[in-house]
Image (cartoon, rainbow, N blue to C red):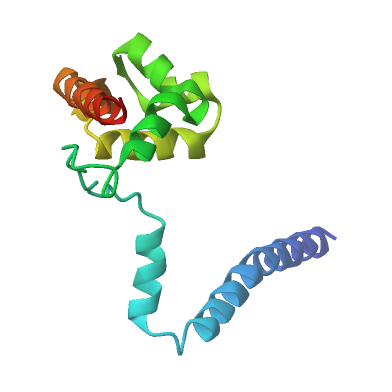
Length: 157
């Protein structure tokens, strides 16, 4: 009787182990079949796509050359659009992306504003003591933008 109970327990344990190992082996087999003919370069592209990339932002030269080559639409959009991002950034002077996101409320809007504001030289990317990216309003950039707008208005008047 004791041998029968031990035999039943051993069979149940073996079935449980097979039940737990079978899906893993099946999954490995399917994964091997699926990716068997895929080029390794393609797989590496998918791995690379999931990593965060820091892109270099091209600066725009804000020298007034007349209305034909003007970037005034971009400058005015950065200063007055994007959900008042400029107003919030100016009030904070130094800010993290997430702080501005809390004020504006949209990741897409904040990301676009940060890129455009960096392009015209309004903000600079800095790092805090822990290596986290922060943004700071650039006084020189603000002066260049002011001069750019004044020259545009002088040409109108």
